[in-house]
Length: 306
Image (cartoon, rainbow, N blue to C red):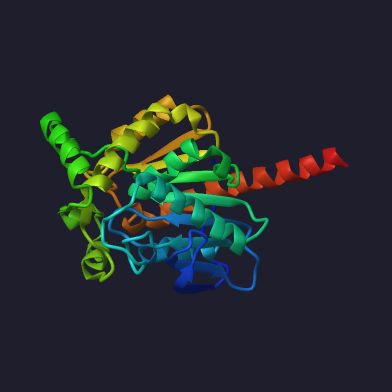
């Protein structure tokens, strides 16, 4: 795949506010829009556990300055959206949030090739959304799972998993601290410091959410052949939070729609790594390739209909 140079031809406008969404609740929404030009593609970002849309500002600005409209919603219980930290009503409700985010981006940039990117927990969500909500996923041209949380890098012992599942049925909203060393996120000290200083991140996870992620990760790996849209998997080889070998396993089980790119010496937050400009360049090239094929397919259908 030929890579593009990021020359950032357009300035970017960033809008962020609380909005009423199609799900009937308020969500904090970010939009990054290239100035003076209509976006040639749109990208919806679904963040990870304890994270929020604003932490993707760097990658969003790079993409928007190259002509991609970018939208990110803070999931319930995250960032500046309402809800108890780390609590979910159900895993299906999180999949609804993916569809809601994609729909909001489609309304913002109508008739523009649409893509969705999920990071960590968000990677788990977009993969399961593409598999379980295939009718909804027909609205997009492709999806990207970045450091997807399919399996933890250090899997708990079976007896702890059995006990945890029993507790999750009894006290689903019991919250634990999702502890990790900030150095596991990225190798760039400025990225580590940004995480520590961010007032909107949290480290809470309920039993229901934790075990939903474990089970849905295995589900996605067991049904990888049902990913029918073009899909790019990206993972750092030094990720000690989400297992990169699980991502490789999913790619091996999937069909030819799924491509994988491993980034040597990179950790969990690829968008904060020292290589991030190279990573964004690769991502932009992939989006451009599949956006172009979508436009060609659309024009071909119009000519056939004529």
